[in-house]
Image (cartoon, rainbow, N blue to C red; front, side, top):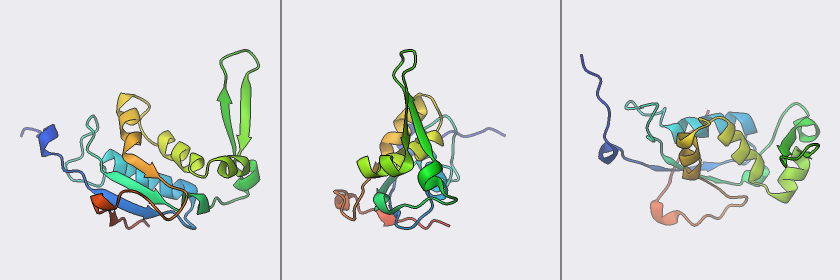
Length: 143
């Protein structure tokens, strides 16, 4: 038996719409990451960009559990000695409501060129409005 690999011209990409209101951060991020990778398709190939585009609205109204509002910390480093900086979840969501969700999804994608390409296929908005009505996104059923 031969294994068939889809050509780039055979890949059909859909647009999905996800409402993040009152959804748990990690559970939503794992479902969206699977759709971005294309794991929901029978023709899934790990080394190709088979995934669909996802539009996420109401990212500012996402919730976390277990007291992570104050405990969850995002770290970044300037590259200089002693240059580590930290931001709590509460402060990060006040500054940019899309940041925690984008970081969670990015962490669940491959850490290579493919992952950097796939993260561009998710569009995250803090409110209800989005400029992607022309693509006719269909609602994505999440567990």
